[in-house]
Picture 1 (spheres, rainbow, N blue to C red):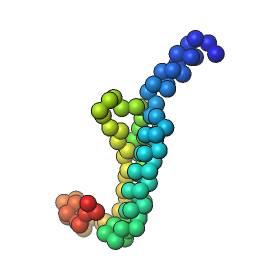
Picture 2: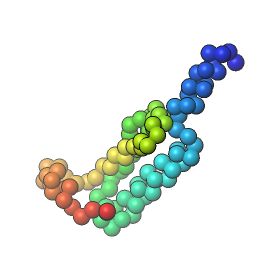
Picture 3: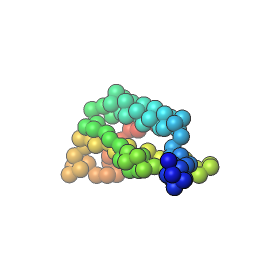
Picture 4: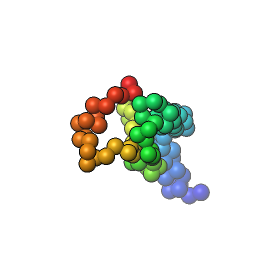
Amino acid sequence: MSAIQTYFQDFLTNIRLPDNLKKALISAHTELREQLKSDDLTKDLLVESFLQGSYARSTCIKPAPGKKVDVDVIVVTNIDHDTVSAQEAFERPRLI
C-alpha cells in the first residue's frame, strides 16, 4: 500500500463512526420504529418508516467531542392531509 493510500485510510478511520456508536444508533432507530409499529397510539396510523439523510447514505461522519449524531427517521402516516391540518395532526396524543 502506498503512503497516499495509507494516509487516506487513516483519514477515513478518523472520520467514520466508530463501531460502538453505529451499534447504538442501529439499536435506537430500530427500537423507535418497532415501537411506532406496535404502540396503540401510532400502529393504526403508520404506513411506513424509513431512514434518510447522511446516516442512511453512509456519509455520516464522527461527531466532534460533545456533539451528537442524528438519524433521520421518516414516518409515513395515513393521516389525510386534505382533512386534517398539520396542527391537528401534531396535537394528537404523543408517545412521550
